[in-house]
Image (cartoon, rainbow, N blue to C red; front, side):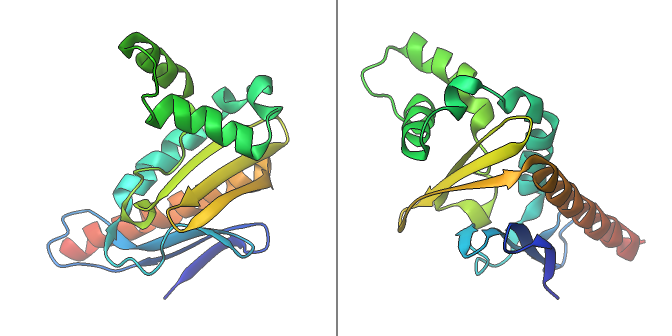
Length: 177
C-alpha cells in the first residue's frame, strides 16, 4: 500500500515498503517527493534501499539551522543552482585546494543527490531561512525546478516519513523473531 505523507499540493512524500527476503534490517521500497505536479525521485524504481535515504533525511533535519545563508537566499533559482552545482560537482579551473574548500562550504546544501536509487538520476539542493525551505532539483530529462515550502511543513513531513521508515524497520525485526 502506498503511503502519502503530507499535502501533495505543497510537499508530500509517497512511499511503499517492498519487503525482500533476507533484507536483514534494511527497508526496501519505492519513494518520491511531490511538490504539486513536480516530482523529485523515481517512484517506479523498484526495491530501493530506503536506509540510505533515511540517512540523508536525518542529516537534513539535523543540520537545517546551518542552511540559512542570506547570500544564497538572495540568489535566483538558476543562480543558486549554478553556485551549488559548480562548487560541489564540477572541477572547473579551480585548484584542488579550492575544490576542497568549496566542498566543505557548500556540501551541506546537498539534499538527496546519491540519496538512494530513487534519486539516481536527480541532483537536489536546499537552503532555508526562518520561514521557508527552498528545494531545487533537476534530472537529465527535466529542467531546473525550484519550490518553496513552509519550514514547519518541510520538517513535519520529513519527520513523519522517518517515523514511517522506523516503523517499517521495526516491523521487519519483529517478523524475524
